Image (cartoon, rainbow, N blue to C red; front, side, top):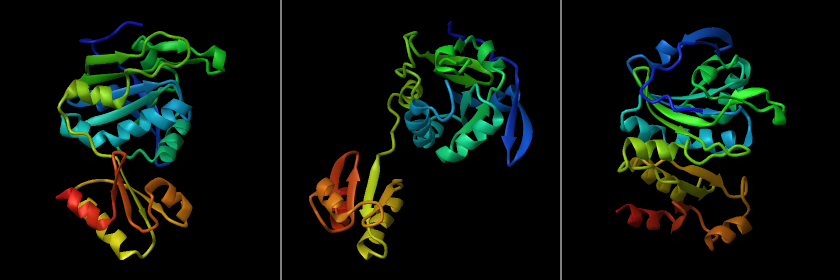
Length: 241
């Protein structure tokens, strides 16, 4: 596998599924006149791809776009039905999923490999690249090791290449209860600060014992930011100041 930096991406027509219908999409439509961050992986619904690779690109999409990326594309040697269902399952609204069903694009990139040992047949080696107007500017190709290495094609590496000083979104979770006014206040403050968050409902998704185990408290809300326990709404207000 050789890098294709400073070369044009292969000219291919992808057979995609959109809103229940077939739609042909060409590489010109994807890449012409745009800056595109691409990551390619061995298969939809596989562990590393579903748990880490796709979610982190989706999470860093705003930061990537703030630093000049027009579109984020995930390519896999899977058919259009599989890729469209995987996109729904992943809830990755910031990513365009492209099926390379016959492996033509992946083969043209020199990244088509045998995965016969897993019963996959021909699949893509894991890699990422930054493409500007159809020309590959930078490629991050995973090292040729047994298995499925995942060391350099991640979203953080791509963002750091584009802008080492880029601001990454904070990881925020709010433990709350339905109808809690203090929880509503805390979530409002986070939204005003432009901070996205996950919400975990006590009694619905976690028990009181679980809340006490992670926060040491029994009251809500309890807010965590980048692994740090901030506390309740008043604590959050002080933190945001």
